[in-house]
Image 1 (cartoon, rainbow, N blue to C red):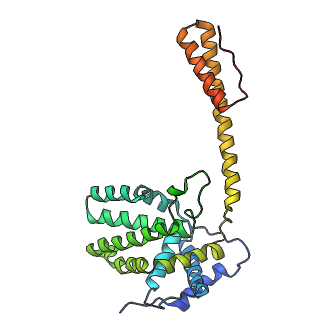
Image 2: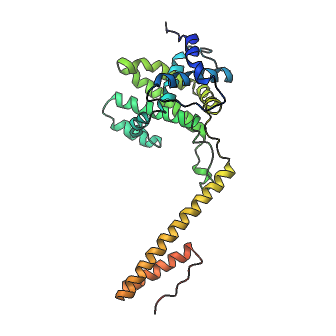
Image 3: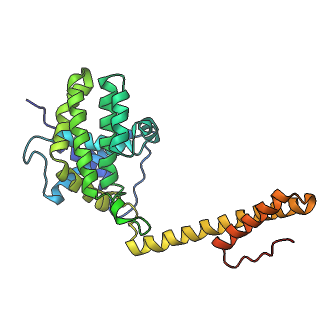
Amino acid sequence: MPRRWPRGRTKRAASRATSRRGGPITLDTSTDIQTSYFFMLNCLLHSRVHTGIESNTEFYDEDVNVYLAHLLNAHIDPRYVARTSDLLVPDDATLHRMIADAPDDRQRYELYRANADFLLIAVTIFDVFEDRHFNRHPAFHVPRESHVGRAALYYALAAAYAARLGRGAAALAPTLTKISEGIESYVRILSYLRGHYLDLIRRYSPGELFHLERSIQEIERGEMIEQMRNEFLDTYHAWLKTGVSELKAKLAEQARMLKEIDPTFQFKPPA
């Protein structure tokens, strides 16, 4: 029979982390990893209560609470990010190629688990898949639900490979299966936690993102024009010194390209 997590002691141990809800909380993870872990666990338990998805409602899932708290806590540690970065891929096709080339089941398990963890945290805590970009065709937009579905699939596959392995990985197989089967609930819980307990920066509205991206594009355009002008002047000075016909042709082409990107640019080709 699975061992239940001692809720009372957990909440008491973590209550100090959220007792001052109004002010900023700073955690020194280099010296007090346990405190940051209990902070995350306490936030998770409170989020479950407020979303109406309390632990063990449909099945025993306090092991999922522990897993998710550890996962949240791991993202505070840059060493975790560095350790998993080589396992993360942008799409299914790339992941399938890496799976096919993996030397053993442990590597396949780690690939599926790392990418499932990334998608879950990216969709909920960092919310990176929500809005469409104004300069991206709608046909290329991937709905948020698709990323949630990928996370569920990856957790299921990670659980299948974990069950084949010995020691710690095999013990995680039931937990990963629960996350896969209850992914929608855990997405709701973590999304609530993000806004109400982690106090991450407010997301920009689509209109604000539009103007921000336009501003960035204008800055990049200005930098490009400056670089093209410098290259044009280098060619012009080289042509004045040498009179080489190839440089004259290059100069005319650079002037044409500059005129396209900057209509205010004026240049009369040399005779």
